[in-house]
Image 1 (spheres, rainbow, N blue to C red):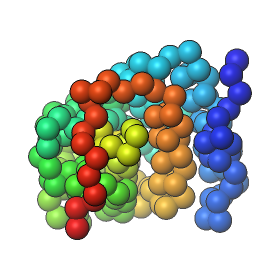
Image 2 (image 1 turned 45 degrees about the vertical axis):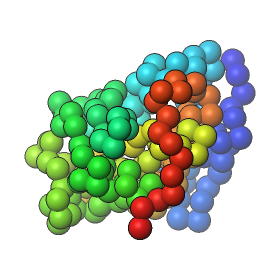
Image 3 (image 1 turned 135 degrees about the vertical axis):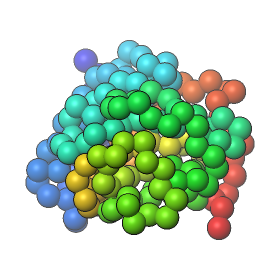
Length: 185
């Protein structure tokens, strides 16, 4: 078995806003992720297992998955949960906004978010994080919850570290990498 990466260790260390329960959960996820990607570098296999790992390990989620950049649009990738929208235009909805801004977007109440794309009527809050490889945007990770205010900055920081750990251990095909660009303002 491979030892946890520095990113897994970082996920295990407590942040100022992280509770001991979060520390334990995200630390365990970092270790489990290390095991999942230790002998597998395939992009689709690794992001598929990552979505399943989060969906089955974190409480109060009803959808976890990836939207992958295809041209300027986001196309549905591996996910766990109900069937979802298969195409999201650049800048549209929470996922499109996160991709356009190349930054995390946390939405405490999706019904109050202008332009929210409703794929599951049970979703009440959402967190979308950009996915990068070698500084290039390749998509977003979308997490939905049936609970208002489910996600906070601690969740965002921890999942971003797990995403970094995932991408450090994953080979992404060159054709999948978008040109490097500065965030939109």
